[in-house]
Amino acid sequence: MSTLTMVHVGLSLIGIATGFLVIFQMIGGKTLGGLNTTFLVTTILTSVTGFFFPITKLTPGLVIGTISLAILAIALFAFYSKRLDGGWRTTFVVTAVIAQFFNVLVLIVQSFMKIPVLHAMAPKGDETVVKVVQICALVLLVALGVMASRNFKKATA
Image 1 (cartoon, rainbow, N blue to C red):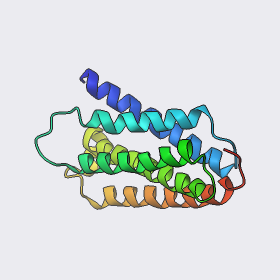
Image 2 (image 1 turned 180 degrees about the vertical axis):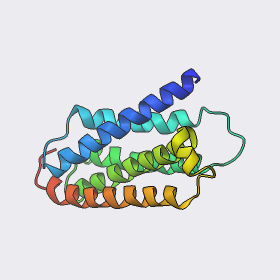
Image 3 (image 1 turned 90 degrees about the horizontal axis):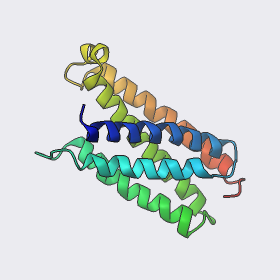
């Protein structure tokens, strides 16, 4: 495994772990601190490092990385410039959860491509089992996002 791959995967896993912790902080109506910064920075760096791999054609990963960076720019603006004032709080929750979903979506795809037992279940990557796992992740993150949006409004940023 190349150094770039290890850094990229490490950033991604840290981003995913801290992303869930941040979402749970929002659900709990808690103030966001260092975990939020770690989530945002590692998620941005995950997308950026994805562009350092040899690019021979446009891939879903490149499209997701580009969209994720745009979503994260809105999240950064809502958090740091608008300080979660008014509707910017909900904007932040939505953009953070979307960025988290993109991280998890790529994790699912890569897991089915790289982990032998999963790859055996879905060698092409577009089998029903992959789609079911992706839909489950979407439903989970939408539900968490709704709870976070409701509860985080009560918190102080």
